[in-house]
Length: 362
Image 1 (tube, one colour):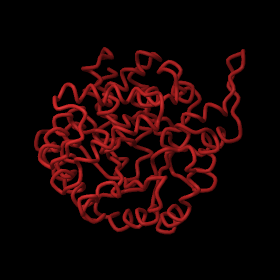
Image 2 (cartoon, helix red, strand yellow):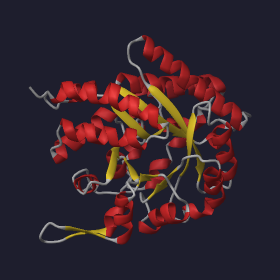
Image 3 (cartoon, helix red, strand yellow):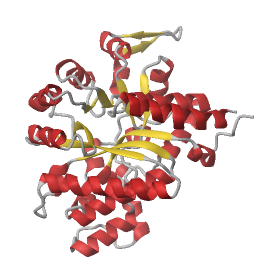
Image 4 (cartoon, helix red, strand yellow):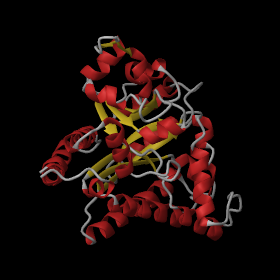
């Protein structure tokens, strides 16, 4: 008998997460405690519930630029090795509790050096937190693999330096590179040097593109920069026309991305909150899934968007009528697209995801 698709049951399912920001996933209580410990006095609230409400309300801004503003508070309390270790450790705990079995967590080291840390010290602290979190989760019977993507801010001029950082730590837990931040006015081609450096070292990278800006952003990320994956990419729907007969006709860019199996790191709730789409029902996720694009489900920022992987999946189930086989497909899509080795990906798919979904499917 097929297991009912409830939130509790979805939480039991193994999940793979490719797009989640470390500084967007703190626990509200941790933000308060770290602020008190560091003397950070700019928080908008001194009560845990009020602070959680602030982040949740601020996220529903209808604008990517406004959505990003509350990050000043989380980044503000993440300026010491102890704080970075704790946030990374708790991130793994929270993901493991939601049965995420593989995750790539990204963050921008350049935002965490205000207290005097070097970029290398920042990454060391985060990777140590991930490793300790993995050990603790494993001891409790919740095996999870967490790897790191280092991100450069697209409005800044440190992307080559951050790409070099990714290569220095590639054998210590960093599996890729990314650029993030406001899209409009900051095209990915401003960072060609960083992407060329990554390619010259046989390294992987993703690019935030097609979220708050349209098809040109996606085109540049793929055609000029050579991105392995697309962060969000919702605006690819602008290159797909669905006729009155229900037949979808793909433009050249959309057809190329589907043909090349370029993964889309889609974050439904976040996309609604930033105004990239009007609602979950109008999100192009289902259109792309039906057209067999390689779509994946992601959280983006668990604190800001007040979400988990299970909640994101449930929203898609309730909106589009997906079943367990669909959720399994999206999960395997993510594992196929992960920046770890083929053997590691295959082991997680064959030894964890498929067997556990087989029980849920019945």
